[in-house]
Length: 239
Image (tube, rainbow, N blue to C red):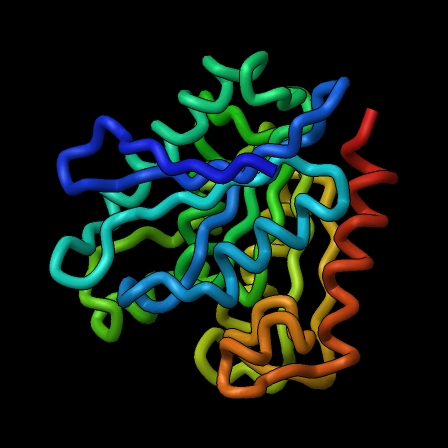
């Protein structure tokens, strides 16, 4: 695997990490958007998620959007847009199949991923959202001004896979996952939702691989989201 970082044409120093498997055929691609309330992006839901997808024959990418003193919702969106533009433009060199290029976001990154998926000219063909922020109920806590992305869903929103935990007190089911699922249903967007009875917010892959960099937080049952997500991808998205 070749790993490299490119700087994006974005004012506040955003960049894109590329995890490229050298193959004989083009592979599906996944663009990873980490969470963390616009603080330092966490290894648990960036690098380790990208590498895990790489083990499933994906080309993987991580968007390093502006956080901390540079945080800004619009600039974060711009970083994602520029990342997709770069990947599509260099698809041959990156050995990625743009017809199977998607986005995955966690928590605050889930809000950004959903927002990008809802754009009219989105290049994402599928969307995966882990315990996502949907409504701007956390703006004050995060120090940004965001959108209610449930209101930007259209019939052209890509197929979406979403999961969370009923124990999540930061992005409660009724205020976030449920609201977004309802918007997808009303717009007849293909979707799948798993709201686990165990686990909690911010546990990424929920297995030992992310627990070792996440205060030993794991949950065997909630960790099944990845297996279920791969099944969904192969049944709904893959050609």
